[in-house]
Image 1 (cartoon, rainbow, N blue to C red):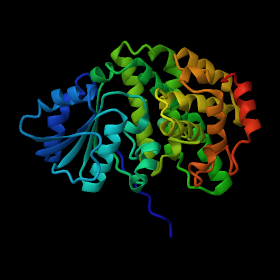
Image 2 (image 1 turned 180 degrees about the vertical axis):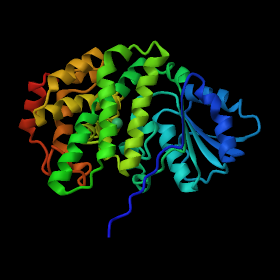
Image 3 (image 1 turned 30 degrees about the vertical axis):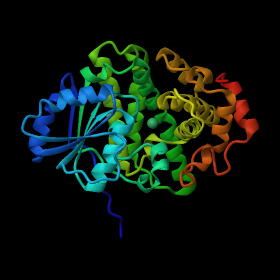
Image 4 (image 1 turned 120 degrees about the vertical axis):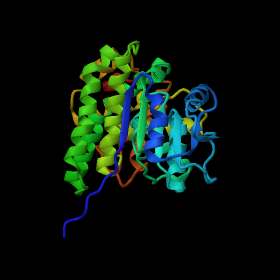
Length: 343
Ligand code: ZN
């Protein structure tokens, strides 16, 4: 018998200036009268307050981003913020079996539309590391997102530039390990990469509404690719393992200022080198996008990068990549960093 395939993708996606103003309409459509709003402590909280002020007939419970275990009373969970509030909202929506609505205040990674929480948080809250909940609605308000720090938006381009490697790793795992592979999901993820690569220079100033729109659409496309695949595989391969290894190190050693999308792009340079594909072209694109092309510009040194490259293969042992099962040797890691000019 053939296996059943099923997938979850968002039902309402709205892009553009004042997309957040559609919240009352979306809540009415799904019949939600009470909502729990998860938001961050400062800037995103102010944005959240101004959005919920416009939801006149709705009861609102504001929830901080550290709130995980307690049940929420609302009919829906609404995330208004960047990475962490969205991750916490995914957990709450999952635990309380409520629909999730995401209003991103930045666009620095593809978690805004994916069903999964970030690797580092999943590691910390290991009970929830494997949850999957696709947002029912995404309201990508480009006017709000334009207010995010440009470095974070450029990091969004970096996250997208990694998809050339993640898709390649997935196809490799399919050939080497027989891992299930979805052509549709792979093509969607690759399309997001191509759009980012082709537009990187033009949009990287993020001064025009349409620049943000290109970025957000491509990031949401990745979220949909993960929903179709039923795994983050199409959007997260060895380039992400490198980024996660640095992020874990940073978390454990109190290193601030490492930015996910920047690390993903740097990881993609090394992995392109290992695959023998055009890493020089990727670096040129990163430079045009204003992304770091040297480790120290991303706030890490050579030792941290070598540590990350030699340990990355252990983070998700079930996920076969170009790093293989035994990973890179110290010598190979040093040579890759040197040859690509990252160190
Ligand atoms: Zn990512």
